[in-house]
Amino acid sequence: MTSLRRWLIPSLIATLGLAGCASDEPPGERIASEKTRVTKPDVPAEDLAALVSGNTDFAASLYRRISKPGDNLLFSPFSISQAFAMVYTGARGDTESQMAQALHFTLPQERLHPAVNALNLALHSRADAPVKGRGSPPTLRLVNAAWGQKGLTFEPSFLDVLAQDYGTGMYAVDFTTKSKSIRDDINTWVEKQTMGRIEDLLPVDAVTPATRLLLANALYFKGAWQQPFNEAGTYEAPFHTLGGDTRQVPMMSASVSVPFLDSEDFTAFALPYVGKAFRMLVIVPEAGRFEQVESRLSADFLEGVRAGLSDSSIALEFPRFEMKQAFSLDEALKALGMVDAFTERADLSGMIQQADFRLSVAQHQAFIAVKEQGTEAAAATVVGVGPTSAPPPFIVDRPFLFLIEDVETKSVLFLGRFVNP
Image (cartoon, rainbow, N blue to C red):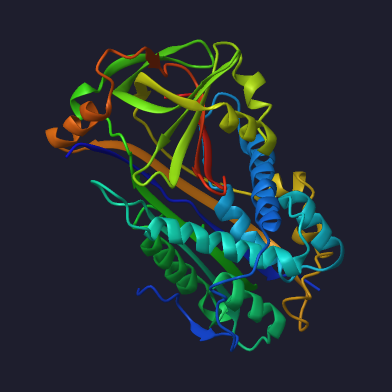
């Protein structure tokens, strides 16, 4: 069977350090609340919608801060929001309000964290749901973990939220004497959670004897297209970069029936994964209008794109590509207004009263690969779902934006752009 799969594995570590004044179980001794995860949270639909909309606007804001002229970009706003939502649990005062502003958290804490839990559970349920016909549903792995210094007493309310809404406890370790081995152990754990795609997430200097707390989210997604590409149809074709250069790329091709929108300054289409619960949304600006369309990126803009999609049969030609990026989020988050959290003014007293804490590092890494694997049987499946006459062609031979989203909630799991092969 011929199939095209995408592997997207972002992960983020938010590290809190003391501010001057391999099994699936994470390393360390588990210290957890007596409470268990709420598996059926009673969350109003409007709260879930507010969370998703805020996460999408945060994604767009961060996209503008970390993108560089002429470069590709890949990150997971979902993973970043997850890690910082756990930090936000302990934020108070100006630190709390600045984090809410930067992360676009519009719900009060007592409603935000149950909404995060509801969204995570919903995503897992769709990934686990059986699908009709041939193929397996996408694989989605979303895990959270926190590590704290032995001997410190963390606030019971903080541990309760971690347990009830994030499905994790605290793992006690001794940063003061074993910071290097702890970094190695956590990196190994993250690598295992992401099926080996995220390596050495924490840089050498990210964990020191002064570190007191780390919180992490690891996200792994693997899905096969509902209508796969035929490997035999891939060929070398020109791709026109933002700078005006032309480069050769491996161009995949398939006759597909997909949600499609042809607007005045961009074309958009969605490629569903098996089961149609998740999909990739691709936005291809017209030549010379990439920056203009890119500047409109927001929750409202994406909602307008989705609303304009209608099923169309096209002969799609789409580049095969692979991308891996790692970067610090510190400066970008400060620019978005999260200033105090990284200074001695940080108020994270909702976590611990014994000492003053501040964020010392926020590191993110993501990977995506587009590959063909399969046999003629899948190619036959593609032909079987195509129209009997030749559909109009659409060739993605210029820079485009892409995102992976959950169709029902419209939650953006991954966001990026491909501008430079």
